[in-house]
Length: 429
Image 1 (cartoon, rainbow, N blue to C red):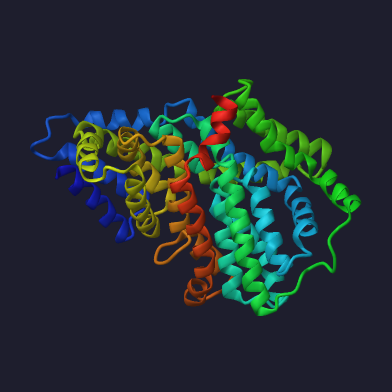
Image 2: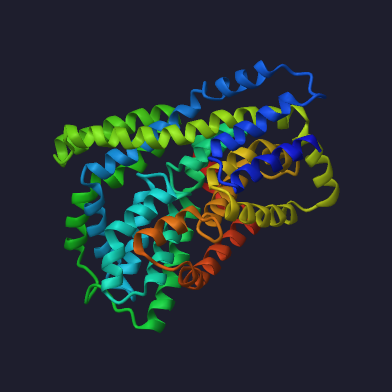
């Protein structure tokens, strides 16, 4: 009961507008100030400091920085040309191009919100000018960022792997197939909606092989980045954290010496933006160290495991119930916060139920990220609607067909775990 009260206190503080990091920190410290708690307050400070002292966690700031560096090095316009060439001839061509761009950018930015914001600025105005409704445009660009949450290097998967003590390399490889399935499902939904509304293709005909080859050549360094990443991790050339350092060198070399668009000023701007993003995320991670210690000390995972296994005999039923919980929490809290609060609690539960933590990790990231694209507190929703000046009502209405496509993929992942697991099992054993 004490732990539940602490968690509720944190949620209440967030609800009244306190910054997430400080709400989590105050809730965690409160436990150590209670009369019945015999632990010294210095323990809380130690847990906060130790939460940042992790080599695997080094991947977070490195991959955040790589997203800013890649965007500054001329990658985005090259990928957009390739995406438009590959999908622009389909029904709703420019909308399809935005989804293809999300899949390509997933291997660079690692952040659904960053991808949605970037696409809203680059493509949002063009989509609306071509006759796409503002609500449809906002929903498309926001939900498209969901692909980014699964395709490596996903920042959320790194945090989940760190907190749940799950192989980040396996999580990266496992995200490839679900990311492709999400892309296909969303493209089908876009095609159906575009056909009904008369959204025309961007190109008159499918491109020739020569045109595709030319566009691929100009984008090859961006397309090879996630390939180098997965190959390096698979064959032990570097750990996920070391891969982040490799990626930064890769981006600087490509931007400065191959594309020749990355200047000293743009590098400094990328570092400045990266520091802002890292500061926010790391502060949350550090303060969540106190909460995680309280949860572990009070044996919350063990208690939940005993109750859960007594109620849900089927792993599939357990996953369905947890999926509903994750969507609801994702609607109320930022995805990173949900992962940091629940990963230490739920990973022991699903392991005891015989569920692979890699399988659950992909499911968790998909659902909490999707929750961030829905009312009432969706970060991606507010970001995209703010940039495009779209009403939340029209956004919500236009989002429903995309939501059905996402849930179809989620159900497939739940009922057929090998969709997620066969690739990491095949490549890493």
